[in-house]
Length: 214
Image (tube, one colour):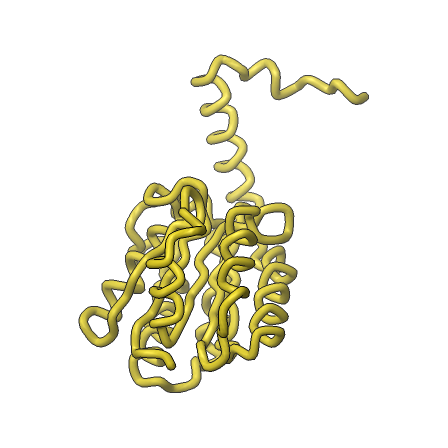
C-alpha cells in the first residue's frame, strides 16, 4: 500500500520560522535523495485537500515534529490527525519529535504517549518519540553540531541513518535528544531576559507584573 516516502508534519503555528522547521530541514538534509520527503504544515492546512490525504497514504513513514502545547499537541495537529484517521493507516510507520520551551525534556512525555496510543489505535508501526527540552535555544535557526543542540544533531543523525536503512532506531538516539542544552539556572536567566525584551518591544513590559486574579 505504501511507498518509500516520508511525510513530515510541521505542527508549529510559526510554520517555516519555527524550531520544528529547523528540525525538519536538518532531517531532510541528512536523508538527502535516499528517500522522498514531503512537508505538510498543520496550521493553514486545507483538510479537505485530496492531495494531502494522498501524500499521507503514499508515504511509508509519517514524522510529526511539533512544539508542546499544555503538555499535549497543538489543536491544528489534532485536527490533522483526525483527518488522517479517517483513512487506512495500517502499515505506515509513525514517529514524533516534540520540543518544549521548558529546559527539562520530560515535559514532552504525555504528548509522546498520545502519539504512541494513536499509532497503536490505527494499526501503525510506532518508531518512538524524541523529547527535546529548551527548544527556545534553537528558535528557528539552522541546527549546528557545534551549538548547544549538538546532542540533538547527533540524535537526528542516528534517526535518519536508521530510517534510510529501514533499521530500528537505537536507544541512544532517544537519550541524546533528551539531554539539557544548558543548566536550568542559566537557561532561566536567558529565557527571562528574552521574555522581558520582547515585552518591552511590544510596549507591555509593565503588564508582566499584573496580578488580575490575586
